[in-house]
Length: 214
Image (tube, rainbow, N blue to C red; front, side):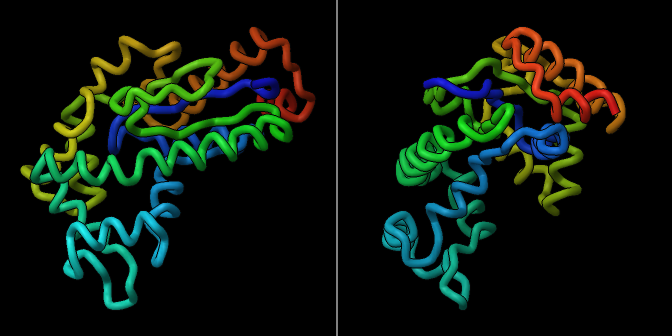
C-alpha cells in the first residue's frame, strides 16, 4: 500500500499510549485508535451491538440503550472464555474499519499512527513502517490503572493478565518509548524516534519538521 509511513503504537493498559498518540498528533500525524473503533463497532443498534446484547443480555445495556462498558468489562475480564467471545465479535470489525481508514489517511497525512493496545495479542498485522511500544514497569502500570479506573487490585491484575506483559512486548518493538520519567522525557523520546523514522523514509515534510524543531 503506497503512501505515508505508518507507526503501530502499542503497549499495555495504563502505560501511556494515548499520551504518546497525542504527542504524535501534535507533530502532524493522523491517529487511528482501535479503542475508538471498538466503541464505533458497538454503537447502539449496530450488528456488533446486537450480537453482544444477544450474548450477555440487558444487564450490560444502559437505560439509554448503550453498551455499559464497565459492566461488560467486569464480565469478560473475570472469564477468559467470555473475553474471547467478545473479541471474536469486535476484532474483525475493528480491523476492517482500520484498514479502510488507513488507506485514506496515508494519502493525506505525513505519517499515520495506528494505536492498537492488543497488536501482538491479536496476531493481526496491518502494514507498518515501525512498531513502537510504550513502556512502564508493572508496578507503575498497576498503580496507574487502579487510580485511573477506580479498580480494586484484583480487578486491575485481571486486566493486566489479559494482555502480554510489557517486558515481552518491548522485546518485539522497533522502538521503545519509556514513559516512566515524566512527560518531557517521553516527549523527547517521541521526537527523536519520529525524526529517525522520517529520515529513514526520506520524508522531510516541511510542516512536520518545523514542529519537530520548535
